[in-house]
Each structure stands twice: as structure tokens, then as C-alpha cells.
Image 1 (cartoon, helix red, strand yellow):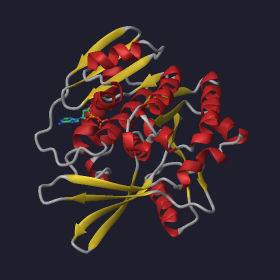
Image 2 (cartoon, helix red, strand yellow; image 1 turned 120 degrees about the horizontal axis):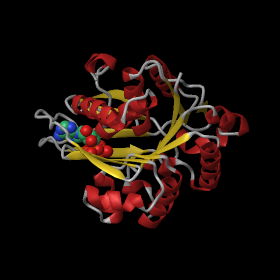
Image 3 (tube, rainbow, N blue to C red; image 1 turned 90 degrees about the vertical axis):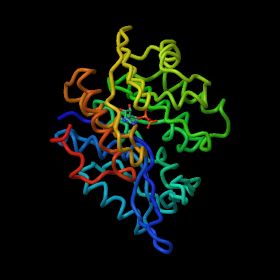
Image 4 (cartoon, rainbow, N blue to C red; image 1 turned 180 degrees about the vertical axis):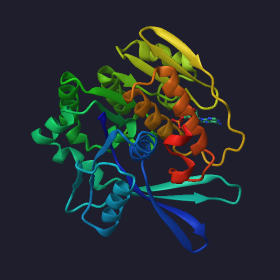
Length: 306
Ligand code: ADP
């Protein structure tokens, strides 16, 4: 059985449902990817590496992971911390805004739990995925340990996968983000950048520009997402453009990139070619954006649909 672990943070999501009620759910980039990967590739072992608290909402979060058949062996419990939380508000014009309370979350402490035994368990998997959000969330003082473990896992033959997913507000400054991203690109076997990430951090606003940037690193497989415009793959020096069928009825683009990543990696793990994997991933992302919120209903997206 193919096996992947995704390292990062899942948060409690609150969304206005009427003037005095809120709908509560769970979301976070790597968790969203894990959900879509497992739904579309149920034979794959999909596990999260994260930390939650000992509170009741953390218990519910764990139950949600389990209800999606996501492995929780490496979801640790921090006795003093609780999960991060965010609120989505929609104004009269439909414009959404997000407020986060995540600066002291349990997930920031995940590296405290990644000891030699856990590293050995991770060394047995096929892929390790993390994003720029995962990097920003990990406590600053734990970052050297994180890079040491990632290097060790790469040497053990685990494929390292990175999506920059740049969120300016999570970083002290651009230099810090760039320095961490450089390390990630240096170690990546697969990179899944979006053009959007590069606009604000590197002032690069085209897929050609992103491709040129990635070519300065030794990354075997680069998949560049550019919304409905196209997807570009660059593998062994060969670049190819893949056409996306634009969706007419876009409801909410939240987690389009996450769904794409999850299904792409699931397909690659299970032997699909790059073109087949991109076709399945963009189909899945196209379904997700026709539903509100990060996680579309199970019946809307599963293995039979992609
Ligand atoms: P991110 O969410 O990482 O910024 P994108 O906006 O590029 O990523 O979207 C990820 C993927 O979602 C795209 O590669 C594409 O497959 C799909 N997608 C996004 N917007 C649309 C759209 N309007 N129509 C069809 N597919 C879309």
C-alpha cells in the first residue's frame, strides 16, 4: 500500500450561518488535501502529522479525521494548548473576510513530538507533504530540527513535496519566508506552486516566471497552478501546458489548490502519469469550487467522479 504523511495544521472553522448562529467545521490546507486524496484514492494510506489539544473540540477534530479515514497515529496531543480557530464572514456584497486566532495553537508545537521513533515511522512512507503554511506555523525555534528531519527523510528515500501557499500575515517579513521557501525548494522532489503565491512574495506574475524560478533548483517534478488559465508541468527539463476547462458556476474557490494537490499526489502515488494526474486533479478542483467552504460533501467528490 502506498503511503503519504501530510504535516501541518487543521483549525476550527466558524462561518456565519444567520445573524446569531455560526456553523462550525474543521479546515486547513494539508487537512483539506488529505481529505480529497483519501476520498479519491481510498487504497492509499493517508496520515496527518500535527498536534491538537486535550479539549473537546480537539476530540471532535480527531473524530472528523477518522470519519474521513485519515490516519491519526501521528496526530499528537498537547496537554496545555488548543487548536487554532478562524472565522469566515461574508458581507452584503458577497465579499469574504477571514479572522484568525492561531498564533498559540497546539499545531505550532508539532516538532516537540517528532522524535527518533516518529522519524523512523515517517522514513517508511513514500511521500511527505508540507506547505508554506505548515512552515510558517512551526515554532521558529523548531525549524532547524524540522529541516534536519526532512533532510534525513529525503536521504531515506521519502519523496519530499512542497506547495509554497504563501500567506504574508503568517510571516515576520518577506525575507524570512523566502529563506524558508528556499530550503523547501532545495529539498523538494515535487513542487506544486501557484502563480498567485509568487506575485506578492517574488513579484513574479506568470507561469513562465515561476518556471524560471524553479529551474534554479534541482526539483524533479514542478507543477505550476494558474487558476482557470492553465497548469504547467516541468519534468526532466520538459515543460508541458495542460488545458483547464473553466467552471461557469464558481461558488467558492477556497481549497481549490488543496483539492488539486491531494488528488494530484494520490494519482501519482498510484502510478498515473503527470498528464493523467493533472487531469484528475483539475477535475476535482473544478468540483470543489462549485461548493461552499473548504470541504465539499462526500457525495460530490469521491473516487467514482474523477
Ligand atoms: P490556489 O488555490 O493554490 O491559488 P489555483 O487558484 O491556481 O490554486 O487553483 C487550483 C486549481 O483549481 C487550478 O489548477 C485549476 O485546476 C482549478 N481551478 C481554479 N479556478 C478554476 C476555474 N475558474 N475553473 C476551473 N478550474 C479552476
